[in-house]
Length: 139
Image 1 (cartoon, helix red, strand yellow):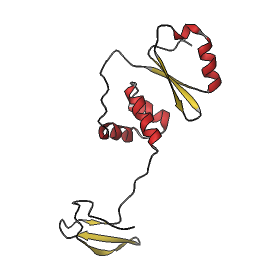
Image 2 (cartoon, rainbow, N blue to C red):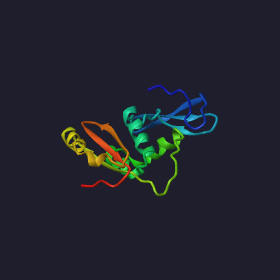
Image 3 (tube, helix red, strand yellow):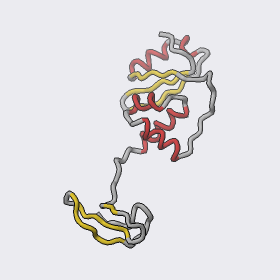
Image 4 (spheres, rainbow, N blue to C red):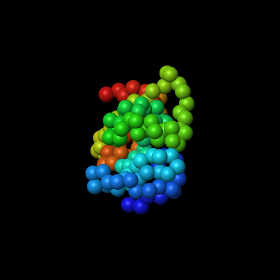
């Protein structure tokens, strides 16, 4: 892998500085920082980034989103900071959610009583669906 610049200061003035664990080390001439090849982090599909931010805006907590999507709550916090997402603050408002399959979704909407007096959002979640509702589910 090609090194473009020092990850610490961004300088392109560096020299080879030995090999550790079969990896070439470099030393920056400007800041004396030792580094190896650029580290590429795990790439997460944009679908999951968008879905996590949507769920955050709907009022779900970081840990709830983590349980649903399987992505670290710290990663989700970093995305919220990176994209400067602000959600309206309301202490009385916290939606509830259910994860159901297609047949359960059709059965859910056959009963008109569940639709009265509540806001509902349905979003796709892989092969299932997520129902976000603004009142407690009445099962």
